[in-house]
Length: 443
Image 1 (cartoon, rainbow, N blue to C red):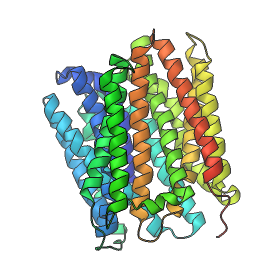
Image 2: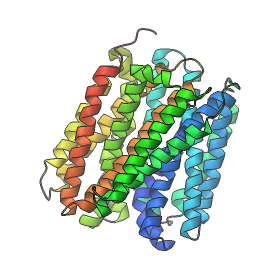
Image 3: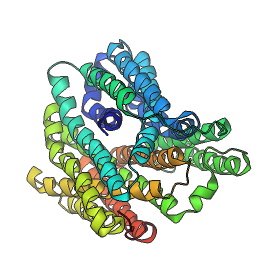
Image 4: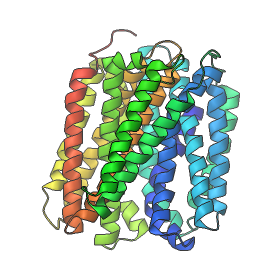
């Protein structure tokens, strides 16, 4: 359990720790604004785009093997990030980091599914797995600010070295080898279509704030993203061995659970990104102070997943997912209604509600998607779930930045972003009510 979760911890930590560090990183390596965006989003884009490949490789070659490969690639590229002296080298190392993360995450859930067979034990395991995301998300901004203010930004990446080494040693010692399905081939045209769709969508949303939503380049990017997604669907329907068999999406639990994951990541990471910028740019907080200001929100995620994992045995997953999404929606709506210049204490409760609600729903959503996976497709199901979540994260960050850039002032942009996030959470609650199955029977 600890071995698998350590790898997942590194992946999520790198999503959040960079937010407060990137202004200092950009100055030190003389990065342009575009380069800074690539340092932040390049990791997420590659991570999201290659998750399906990571899941398919795990199903084909064994999840422990692919998981260990991902940990080794991630750890080595983190060291390369720390040693980078200019922006192009740092960007290239971040892209490789994203590829390593895409090999780690599908395997982490599949290995837990393999190790814990009873529904109650599996729910607790998924709760602990989700709590790793909470711990990493909560530690990221505060740890990033602390490291930048003391040891320097390079330690933001070097911190992965001891964690990666420990993860590899524990996995090889304690995690059993996984079954292989060598007949499963990789569908590279479909994979390229996924990467193109994610990259085009995020790029279009990034540019919308600067160019405007009606700009031809923005509209072209959105249109091409839709075409890439359509090409992926056509390719998967025609392929002999698709990376994501479309029959899996006929399962309401799997497709609906994946959509819920997209929506709650959209709301949560959009909130973290816009709030981080707001505290630094509008209120003049330092990187460390910004991490401390965000800590109450993301700290709630540390135990909400564990709590929901324990409660699911008695209540089932549906009530927990729905209530978590409604609580998060109420939190962001409270920020949007807080006024133009609210005191910081008034913002703590909305942030805590969003953090708790997101993590409270994560365990049940994970169990729903993984429980709907046929035998031999646990890696694919995990990859689908985490791909949609990372697409939600990337679009939440991109849209939040665009709303800040296009608003009359920072405060108005933040309030609009929070209102959009609240609508995403509310939509997730409605969808969960329809798609998450009722209480499962079993030990």
